[in-house]
Image 1: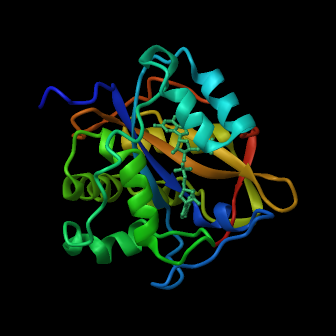
Image 2 (image 1 turned 90 degrees about the vertical axis):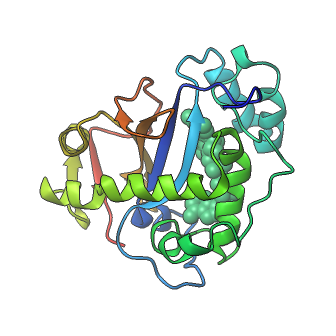
Length: 236
Ligand code: 5GP
Ligand code: 5GP
């Protein structure tokens, strides 16, 4: 570990449910590689501090001023930040470095944004914002994220607990949290969003990973989640 190593405490492996990304008022677009499977997709692997006094301020700055200003604000000093980001803007993701992972990334880390159908742009953005702070090389960063996702198959874990995609059923939030805790052995954080009718649905699952990226840990922080007592898992 070099002297420029980022000091952070753990990672979030953030995965999004595609049905919940797509059925909001904003909608979604499928990537060039085609409609992804009805499976969680990786959003990112994010280095994080376990103690964060500036969380409300950082969130407020982003909400009020937008992402760029929030990034400026977050640069004021470690005590005011909740996570490191953009640690090396000169470090651009190289297609060559991850060439053997592209097929798996297309399946497991697809873009659903309508900005561009190119998932590589999503991976590049996540690399620059979060990956450059991870102390991992490009290939390792993406390979580890894929390995962790495969080792803890959220779609299968939820299905095993009877939590299957449906446009009519709702599930208790605690049953979702319990299923993931049982299936992975560790507590995760859950985030919801709203469908076009305003109903709460499971949007993202945050698994917590130790800073060596070896194993899951119980999440050290809880978060504002926009979830209600009962949530949907919409069909994709
Ligand atoms: P949002 O405000 O939509 O929750 O998050 C916007 C972006 O801020 C995320 O895509 C992510 O890049 C970053 N972000 C939000 N929450 C966290 C967090 O808890 N940890 C880290 N490392 N990044 C976060
Ligand atoms: P974050 O929320 O990680 O800071 O930002 C995610 C960025 O990646 C946004 O600019 C968003 O437009 C882009 N993006 C591309 N594809 C996706 C996707 O499938 N899901 C999400 N959440 N963001 C995506």
